[in-house]
Image (cartoon, rainbow, N blue to C red; front, side, top):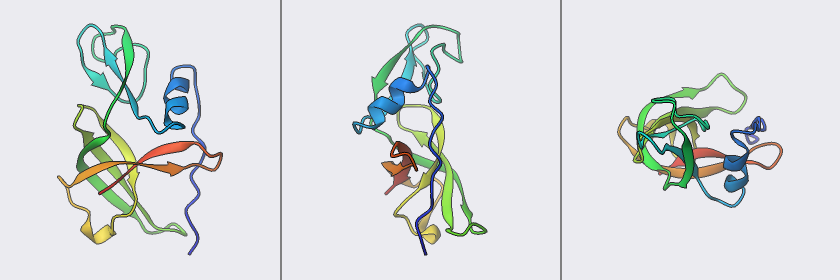
Length: 126
C-alpha cells in the first residue's frame, strides 16, 4: 500500500507566517491581545472579540475530542478534532496510531505530515 498524498495548503497573507514557521518545525497559534484567547485557524482579527492578535509558539499537545477512520480511500487514514492544551480545538489527521487504539481523551502530540509540495501540515501522534 502506498502512502497517502496530502494536498498542498493554500497560503494566504494571514497564514503565510504559520506555514513559514512550520517549515522550521515551529507550531504557531494566534493569541488575542485584548481578550487573551488563543485560536485556530490563524486570523489577524480575534474571532471572539475582534481584537488584534499576535503569533505565539505552542507545544502542540492535547487530547482527542473526536475522530473517524476513512476506510473507503485507497489508503485508509484517521482524522478528527484535537483540543489543544493551549485552548483551541483543531482538525487534523492521526499518524503512527493504530486505528483500533484511538480513544476520545487520548493524549496526543503534534507531528508533521508532508504535503505534496513539501510543506509540513499539522497532524498528531502519541
